[in-house]
Amino acid sequence: MSSLGYDVLFREFAERIEYYRGLGVNPFSLATGCAVKVDLVDVLYPALRSISFELERLGLKIAPRRDADVFESRGFSVYRGVYSVDDPRVDSNSLMVAKPSRAIILAQVHQRIASSPEYFRDVIWRFYYRIASTIGELIVGKGHSIVSASIKSQFFLVDFISTNSNGGLVAANNDTIQIIDPAEDPGSFRQVSVALSNALNDLFTIGAWRNIKVYPVYDAPDSRLRAVIKSNMDAYTSSIGGELIDTVQPNTESLLMGATVFAELRRKPPFYYDRVEPGMEILVSRPYGELAAINAYMLAMLDREIAVELEKQTGFSIDKLLEFKHSIIDLMAKPNVNVARVIESRLPSLEEDFDPREHIAVTTDITGPGVYVFKEIAELSRTSIRLDKIPLLSPEISEFATRNFIIPNATAGTNGAIVIVASSNVVDWVEEELKRLGENPVRVGYVVSRGEARVEAPLELRKYIAAKSYLKEFELK
Image: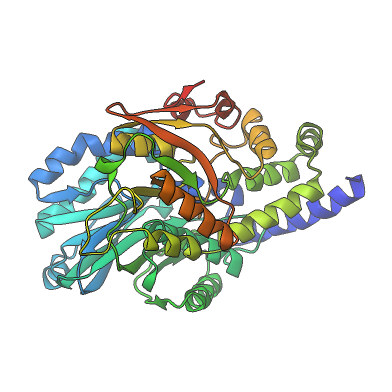
């Protein structure tokens, strides 16, 4: 690319960055997409394990790790509370009236707290203790924890769920991010579409796509931008035939986009971890690794030498990378509802038992943890898995991002590919259906044996993950 072309793109990028700074936001302090999550392996899981027993003694139970919370109800209501991290004051009167049985929790904590399982444990223990002391018995069906660079932006947000009657199945989830691409307008329809599609993806992953209800989560440095985000959330929800129910929002003047989402399940969810068998195959709905390109572009815009090295090492000029980045954002903005319908059609009905010859056993999505989700499947199903392929949207960009320490896990994404574990004949059918619908499914591996939770992966995985805590979870061969 010519020096003149780079200068034009750089000026446009610099103007966008100055616009963010004019809002009081440092875009480089915001993590893109699901990279904003508190580290699962080193922080979140150890913290939860250390307090789960004491919480259960108080009547507060944390549900098993699942993509979405699933509960039985023909109707439900939601009461939302937003609380301080330093001194969470819980309104006992409102909760006594609501009589919730479940909760979906979003925590945004300062990066110092998110850096240590001990710091994180202390903060969530104080909050959960207040909740348990007020309500008594409560199931935390799903939690989502994200990191902020500003200590003033910390909060807990809880959607308390009161069920009205038994009968049907409802799936619920929260996913909330700060930004997708600082090179685009904050709160743009594309950025909002990615955020809400990402929240819904955990529902789509288990075949839940009917009667969608969206309880949005948004924040911004000024009221005008908050209104823009809210308007685009309305437009997106209408475009997918869902219902948006606005409610209490955090007010920390930080940038935030996401939602707690609900959908009806007409069939049993694919939580058959104990039925995963040797010989079952693993398919992903498309290649993954969305966040590498966005982060590589940002760094290339900040440093011309990085742009030169990028082209030398990958063959991507800055123009070509920009075009690729736009295609990635379009991909992330697209709701994976086609995949959801295919998954639903191969799940047992509510009156039917699971049949491994007919039904999908397990699903998950590849987002913040990237390929680590395969280790999570192995742990939950107590199986040994072999991965033969690591299908990335751009292996070259992911390798460059890893080699230059641009992103610790270049397999990570947002509103990512969906993983399906099933017998070969079911995978055959799913693969054919997804291709017919214009998707790009890839068979990536298979289940070797039951008993020990382990994942064999190709040596090339080293090219795409710099975080040693994640890499050590795989046996590379």
